Image (cartoon, rainbow, N blue to C red; front, side, top):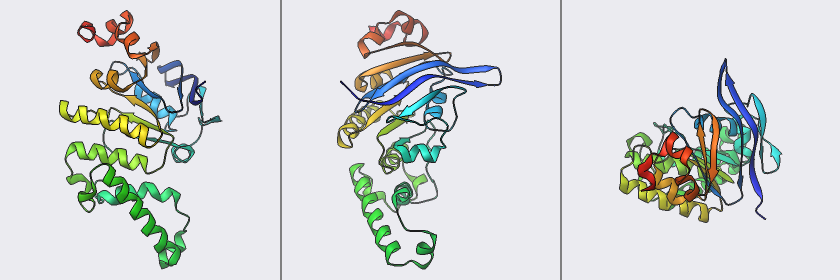
Length: 258
């Protein structure tokens, strides 16, 4: 029997009088690749924000790896083993490519502020170590030749890859990808599909994916949840979702099943 990594127990998010997400229950097992889809405004990113500590659910709880995670701050949730990317890329645009990744590795260092100020042996040793780790990760994403380039100068697709690399530098158990194919052409989307598959295997991750590109979702996800107006209207394997009449009417359209 698969072991549950993320459990979302009847969560709701209310902003004033608006119920953005209503009574959502879902789960992700260890090693699973799951999609979360729905029309714009369905509440998908709000769900991500509740999972990752940006919002505390108005109702219900989130559990991660057997422990309650809702109510914790975002950095604490990251320390528990979750990492995410964003629909709008949020790199440190003025820093170098390698420094963007090193920042994420810094959560694992043991030196303190005094060590950093005086640059003692402990600081030098750990900085050398995280630089090597960051470069190894950049090589995986074919970004090592751009290590000293300013992040904002990278082409769009490479910025997307850098954001995923930075998320992986936190050494997560669960990676949450918020529309990673946004702005990509079909070739880039196909390459991203292969990258997501490879990342899951290489890093032994669970992945939760928000995406509007149905070729990507149907191509990589093992299970899919569908939201509409903040409520779950369907869940199942891609073939079930593709032929679900309510999902077709609410989101997919007839052309997806043809």
